[in-house]
Amino acid sequence: MNTYVSLLRFTEKGAAQITDSANRAESFDAAAKAAGVEIVAQYWTIGAYDGILIVRADSEAKALHWLAELNSKGNVRTESMQAFTAEEFRTIVS
Image (cartoon, rainbow, N blue to C red; front, side):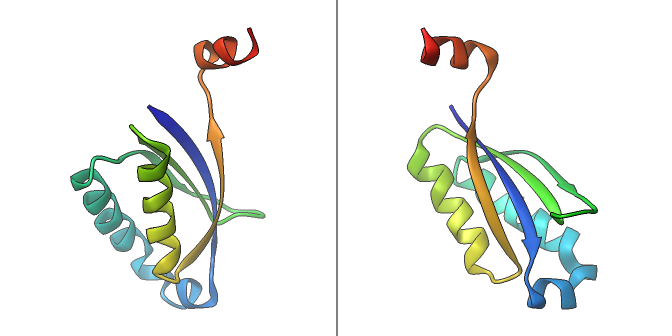
């Protein structure tokens, strides 16, 4: 499984509709799950970023498709990176 951590920032549109953010997140989670993408966690944050999303999927393409889908809604912009467990990292560096 590929894991991605995405840092989220509200767009002007997303900030204007901030009170609906949790509902939008739940709808996104359900649609992603139906497509075989696991939303491991989602947090709203205070600081340089407005949220963190952790996504897992059995293919890079599937995970990136859903991150692009999230961006296409226009409420957030993402900065995403692939993440590795200790075991995955050991394999990479060995």
